[in-house]
Amino acid sequence: MSDTNNPPPCPGPHLDVRKPKLKLPPKAADCHCHVFGPREKYPWAANRLYTPPPVVLENYLAMLGATGFERGVMVQTGLYGTDNRFIVDAIKAHPQRLCGIALIGESITDRELRDLAEAGVRGFRVNRTATTGLSFDVARRLAERVKDLGWHVQFLLDIEDHPDIDTFLGAFPTEVVIDHMGRPDPRKGVNGPGFQALIRLLKSGRGWSKMSAPYRTSLQEPPYDDITPFAHALVAAAPDRLVWGSDWPHVLLEATMPNDGDLVDRIAVWVPDEGLRRRILVDNAERLYGFERP
Image 1 (spheres, rainbow, N blue to C red):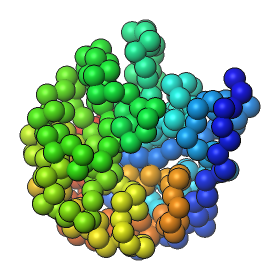
Image 2: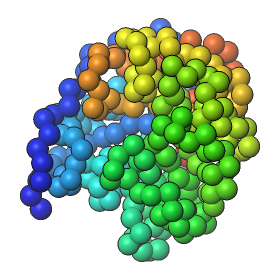
Image 3: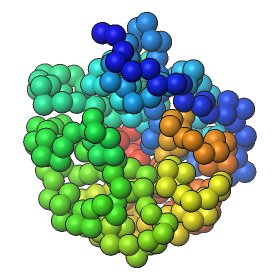
């Protein structure tokens, strides 16, 4: 299938990753990244939202090694649409280190769902910030189909657009995961109605959130100090319902490209307590994604 658009390549991440000052605990997991394979083997979707930077799985694994992560969660990128072959192949090559989140549609068969689960996929993503994402109604119907697989549904959305998210998604057939702390609005602060609903969702035990991608909604340059209060509020409210993600390779970022070593060092600012850091980076990730326990 030929492309219907040709967006320019996204800027690439820093490949000279700075070694962070923070020493991560053994089995720490980066729970959010996007990784790409050779185009000749994994064709791009015609309606892709971006052209990826020239980075591959080996670059991602090198970043994990430089920063101290042993595990990673690959989130299927819209670059490939619902063709999840690349993340399946990557998990197969590194089954002790990687698992994945798929993109799926209603036409997927139960057999295909079981195959994805057996391959190391732990849920599917719904992008509500893009016009190509599934509707909430479709996501709910798919959640009914995957709940017996132990999957969750991962949502990318702007939390202040959903002040009822605690009741709306709290009643989903599966647990739900909210990307990037809900992309909070620094102008509304931690008392914004959507962010407070997110806290209620996490405290209910039906939802999780990823502490990731502060640059998506920060109004500042790195180290994104205006996002720190949101991280502190989540840790204070529901430390057992949080995981951390790098969002590597930071696609569609028009602002300053952060060094991943600097992003890792922000974990110490967001989560000063060492015990809570281990809970978020290791224990919670094991519960949510089913990584093999040490």
